[in-house]
Length: 560
Ligand SMILES: Cc1ncc(C[n+]2csc(CCOP(=O)(O)OP(=O)(O)O)c2C)c(N)n1
Ligand SMILES: [Mg+2]
Image 1: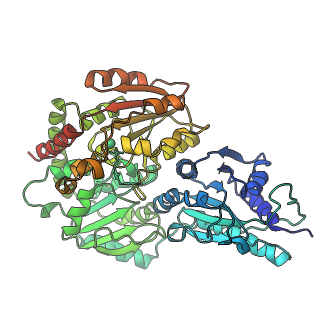
Image 2: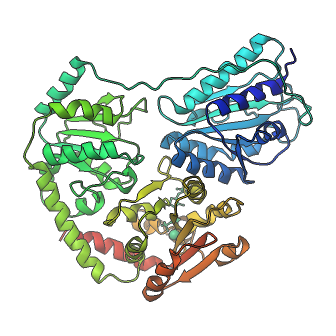
């Protein structure tokens, strides 16, 4: 029996094929030559190549977010591996399955003056679901069993109990080229079965009891994949059981009976807040964009807070957490719903009155609103054709998006796991590539320039449309309290600049349009969304100081 470190790699390849994990992004290098050779010779793999590892990892994240199965990224040793880190952290907190393969030197050569060599074992330790290092020399059948077991464990952790990133570090001894990986030994794998979790009768009774004893109930939905079954259950809860359902664009559940513009609605509140506070708060899904709801609920006299999530961190976002329910929210509601009493709309009516007031004021304000990011985004959302997926850049785009009404039910994604501005464009490119659906990315200027290497990509899909709101810096720092008072606003917070995306578009051979006023915007928006042969950028220039004034005014008017 011929065994060497490439046998382990050969088995990894086999096991991935058996599991149908076939999307792979390679970033070039020499230490990872064995990975390239083993994977790319197999027709089962769809091998892409992206040079910038930071961008490659975010591209993979976008793919995995859409495909909902692990996508593999593979790079060489050294700082290449560190550049995967931002996307790994995002995947960890957004629960997206990424399989990270890093080639490494054998242990005896770490810290001995070789090039591209750093300590790679456990390098992502704080935000990875599992890290394994495959044995570098396989002499006996036992070594191979061990290697296979590590592979199975890593692949299982990538999807169970919730998806996330896992790391397999692969130390390779030379030769890196022209090696023989053939073996007569078949790889052994074990999978993990995702079980549906049902509550025991006793637990269900306790939950129903707690429900019945609680007065006002509110469900707050964080970031989630579209889920029509859950959406139906939430509609039933809000319409028949007087439960206020709050959702954001990134929750991907929507209905007229929900409160879907949290900040807008909260701004309409005047007078006493207590009638609006739930006794029982139930949170489902991941992170929540709205800072206001966090601030309100942290202060409020909420009596009980259930957080429903399979195996996730027990997030006590409001410091009121009283119960973690580690099952799918659909499983929880399907068991609870038949046992819940019907209730007349009282708490929901209260919230809907507030929502209606905010909506009227919102409409009035926007009718006479000056050219600014608020007005621009209103127009952008009106023009996005049905069937588009929307990727929201961090900073203000994802926040503005929470203020508008949508006629269509679009799919929304955003890197809200860690809310970085460092990979949103690459994520959008990967998402559009994998979904093959028309996709629009709404990004700020700093976010765009930060991640412009996303465009340095042979696989850039023509269905990707990029809208840059260029307000010449980080406009968010003009809204939040604080930066203004330091005297360092322009240079050290906003990072004011006059860079344009025009020549970047030219460099990467991407269609480009630019507008700087309302008239131009309306004209170009219609043209911009026509199908095109290349990815396209629309750069919308906007007035930084005016934006801040308009938005402050807007929130004031909502409460009138
Ligand atoms: C990687 C990373 N670095 C820094 C930040 C802090 N940050 C949050 S928003 C922001 C400004 C973003 O500016 P831009 O993309 O132009 O959006 P705008 O605020 O103008 O909407 C910065 C620097 C971050 N979120 N992520
Ligand atoms: Mg900006």
